[in-house]
Image 1: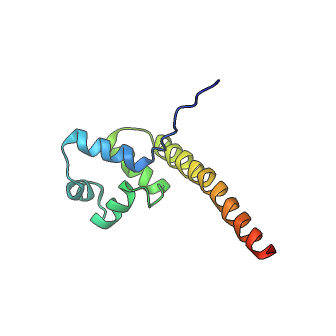
Image 2: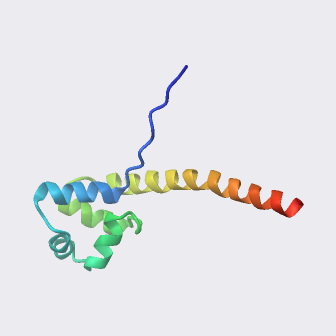
Length: 102
């Protein structure tokens, strides 16, 4: 029997948090370095705000990875979020459809 390991979805915010921690920075200091509000940085770190081209460029300059690295990481993260969300929606719709049939 094949055993599958659980999949842990890691977003760009997780990588940003790792980079900040490795440098000994606070989120507030990072916000100043990247010229963003603390609220926007918090949304970014919690994967609630997508990585735009401009943001990828800023992150690239601060942390050294390529712009494409950040865009790819965000795209993969968001794609997997969609795939995790779709089965739940189908299940909910199926349950609603069954209730409506009664």
